[in-house]
Figure (cartoon, helix red, strand yellow):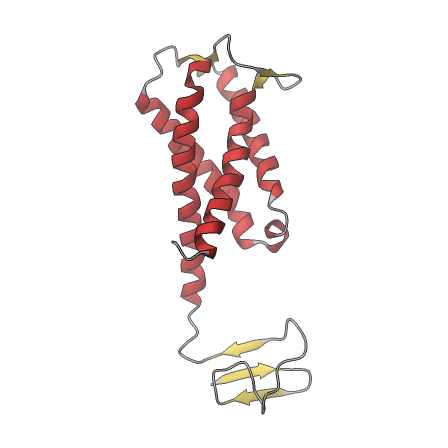
Length: 182
């Protein structure tokens, strides 16, 4: 049973299709429809968003692990010690978590859904702030090979990491969901 509030008065529909009267459809976009049939499951919408977020996290972790390994030679040390694979994996987990958190508005809020490029901008800003923190607390030190971005005085590859891999993870998630591969 479906209750639809149309242009005039509420109409009670016996079928679960979108057509209430003989072949008629609601005329205005954004009409209020209260659906009480057993086929409607709000949990599916929630599950889909969680699945998308999980896909973003997994792809961000894999991409960050590759990125961290590729640019690790541009660092001298981490907290004064050697940079190990464990440290790179921990950094990849942290970066994947940050990308997943940054991606949340792009999954739930229509303003951000229409402006996916903002994911790159926000990710880059967060990465620069993270680099400032890491450098100011001496958590890591750059090697001579690290290209430095003028004015912000952080390394180029870490500054681009969260923005680039964030948008790439988001696009991978979109591709997998649209092709029903995940």
